[in-house]
Image (cartoon, rainbow, N blue to C red; front, side):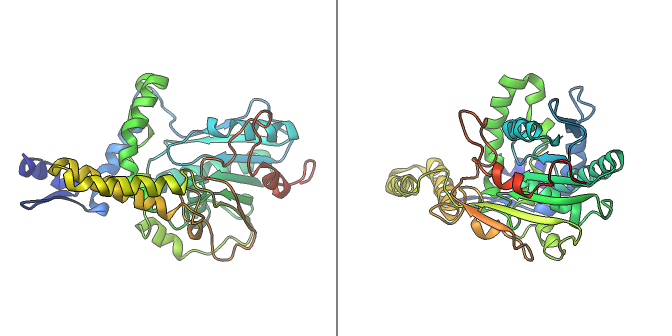
Length: 336
């Protein structure tokens, strides 16, 4: 059965190595991405959604205010930043959401974002500020520093919250999150929640440390016409004590496990180790601190926030982390 499955998946860059005690899955990332790129483009266009990529104007925004485009991250949606968007709109900013298949290939998405930012700049006659969370920062950086379609003067401020500019060790486990995400979205969105409509997980490969995309970004320079800001988090999502306790429990149970159960436990130990690399002051629970930095960017603040805190809150019952720091860096209301 394994050999048959291997023959079926070999053209997609997936192969299996079987020994008397272990089953190893070998993934050729470049071949896998190339073979699934066309399938992903086809999949995200299914289900009647003819515009999986779009720029949405916040209904309460003032069209005369400085334009701000909010870009969400991996496995997220614009609604995640609704509280921050509302606060910015009330303050007088002209707020837009960028909606996109949240784990589709970053190259294609960045090209679309760049084109939309350029068009918005022409329509409004003024430069745009881009505010991002998590992977949205990588996406915006690709659009600004790799994609030549964005002309000078299009973006004047780029504020990135918890950006994995140098990748994250947790990215390799992203495919495992597709299953619970799909189940959740099927209940909330029906057929539109089926996983191909938010991409086939190519973004997870892009966020692997030393991925081909991140290697290309290593050779780029900061845009002289853009002011960069990084808002980095250093608080764990999961308490470090809990991570250590889970890891110890898994190791204690290993000697009594049967083969297939042992494989599952080994995987859980790997994930726990990866979580440990971004916890305990080493990161925000998803991205290491040393990934939330960029050469040449001096406006960087490290705060006691987790990856899930970034711009999360309604501003009334729950304060919105990083909102004050962001508004202090956006163009003043009434300014050009």
